[in-house]
Length: 367
Image (tube, rainbow, N blue to C red; front, top):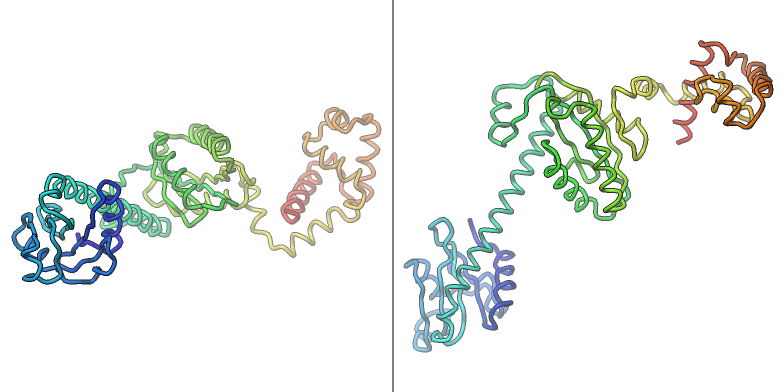
């Protein structure tokens, strides 16, 4: 561990909250890297060099000042981390007045450095897991060496596995929100959630702990909580199960579910098989298909709306007429008109399939 200027300045900021004295932070080469007196930064401090070499407190008086380079009266204390002296904290002033609280300043400094080390290690671990997942979602085969890396990183999951992706949009502090959701997921569920860009979270679950029904319940609970507490809607894509350590397909299916499914919804790949097929259709082919199926029907707003409600109600004429507030005979008249305009009989299964596909493609194109 090496002291940096930023860390030194942080120590100065925190320690001066407790004492009203001039303080310096010196690195392992006896160079002042932070100080309440900015004019001293970059100076060599001979008293600190003695403190580092001897690993003990050095008291500097007015008598030492003309004899040693870069010093002022005060007390120098070694900063020790894991039994290694990595620098010095110096407190300027009358040694008799400083010594009573000098040890406290040394302890506080070492606590701040240990906290910084912990944060650095945590950040390194987070990035290492992100890098591992980035490789993992691209691999078609898993080598022994790759499995060993997982063990080192503490990734202990057993297939069947499932990849899911959470997307957050239109938030000013996306990374802060993502970190909040990751923390919540870590506390709430037994899973591995990681940042996936600046708008998404990728997380992996074991099917033995969370089958699809349970996962949906957990995601609904998460959605409701985040919407209530942070007023942020989440869109979630749930991938397919993989019975091996290869999660590539599950990940890709989760992304597809997120992309194709409803905005702000919980989208399960297995529930979107037809939509997945439609998503592969070229836009020009899609427009041509819509035009040939509907012909001039979209210009007949009343008939077009009738067809939509009719399909939503699974071709149930009673429910459709009730929702449209019309007589059943009026509905039959409209269905006949739809057939006349389009050439497709809305009472025929084949035509119904064509209408459904055309409506889906039209809505997709409009959105």
